[in-house]
Length: 227
Image (cartoon, rainbow, N blue to C red; front, side, top):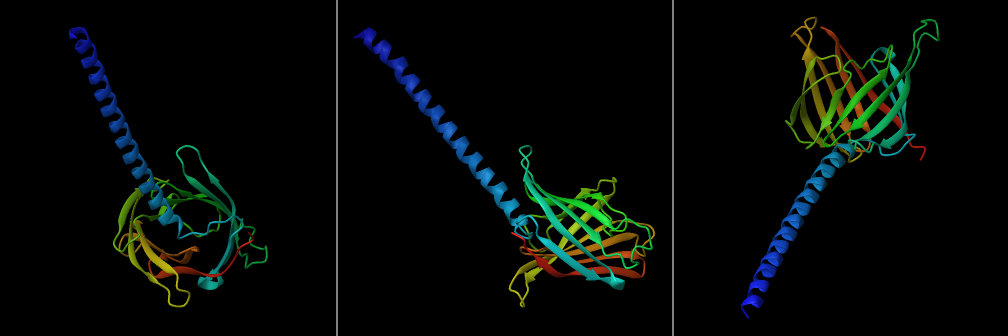
């Protein structure tokens, strides 16, 4: 009996230890799953402000007859670190009918990470976007949400969601973001840029201070979905 009791006690201890280990692993898996769901939810919130299909095309017009068209060429999911990348190409409308000799084409990437989306400018000549590596939007999308980041040229940029709401004309939610970065040539020492994002459409309004007393702007005028 003594030997039997001596044998059963370690086995019970092993079973209890195994049970504790299983419970710890299950808890860890639950927490990990919740974390993953949280991260996906944040990225999904940001991505909801952009179109979700390839060959989606935007057309914009604005300041001093400015205009451009751009399209989503490809959407890819990277395995590491798990980002979603939109490859975009477009062209500024050449109002000189080819006489300027400038390159009016441009290419961009929208890189969606865990909780934000960053715009990379891969190629441009006359395209008016200035901040390469702009963190355009960051979740949670709510008024007074703030973030700061370093652009590709090393400059420091501060961003803030200044307003959110719903457009009564199309019933789509929107948010407005203001970005500022130091620029001694501007009146208050800051370059300012504003973008308005609308659910499923991306940028619908763009404004920037190109001179101390001059504001450049353009707005979305039409879209098309090939798929």
